[in-house]
Length: 239
Image 1 (tube, rainbow, N blue to C red):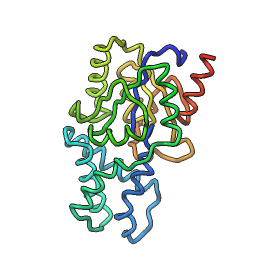
Image 2 (cartoon, rainbow, N blue to C red):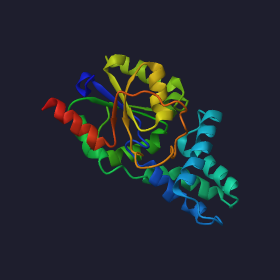
Image 3 (spheres, rainbow, N blue to C red):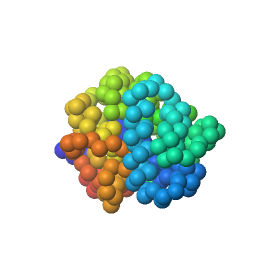
């Protein structure tokens, strides 16, 4: 299997293209700075993952920015610190400030010359619009949790994407799903019979950070530690 075998790259956004973990840690400082004992970065991210995943299961149609407001409230309760409604809302809106990884925009601009590009993300449309500006590329299709009414790893999200891409003349075998999260993306991609590419952003870290433990490690067809590595590997195949 070669990268050049595919016609479309479908991307997770947060954790793959946008540095959501750094964005979360920064935006949670109003909480974490008031806790009696210092929390490690991974302790913060793992607590966030638990509450986010639970809330996504309980309220699958809630907009992501509103869901994050609830996550902020749950974290405040867990850590025993006060949080105002205004702080909760502000955290939900903070996603628009989460930074892109330094290599994302340039790699996407290169890949756009060779593939159709699509987004499959656990986000709302308004929030993604701000992130898209940071990525500096025009995606051929954008599929959000708001559009679908559920959150990955629900297979409904992948079924929806496949149906819409089929309407654009793209078959399942044309798709390479490209993502960091084994839990949200690679495990369901396995279940859907999709080829996948692991952008292993957390290679130098322990644990799973802001994503849940997927259990048994799913399979994947390609692995890179960055979008820049993916673009370089493609360039080497076509040169």
